[in-house]
Image (cartoon, helix red, strand yellow):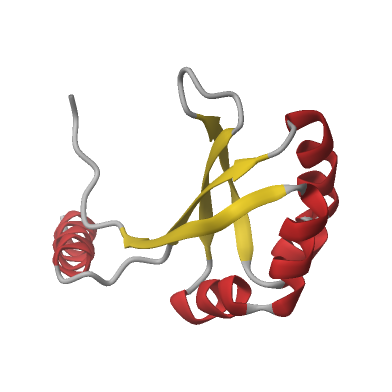
Length: 118
């Protein structure tokens, strides 16, 4: 029975930390327009090793419905400092330029506060 109480206390602490904004994953959303997906995608893929070295844990790639050249990328990052350093890096700016990103990209940093059912 002690194991059950310790488990319950651990879950309560985890939920409290999540509520207070302490979460092991930081999310980064990048939204930008591109000239051509066929040009952009290989450049994006080649930049994966740099993202990994910078603390990226992976993510999901989306395009806006009705606009094949409007990309939205949801990344998982290990911490906010690494995500911020990545966004501010000259390497990212250079990679975006070579990939055919048009205009100024938008960056959003998100802290997950809760998972919820439907």
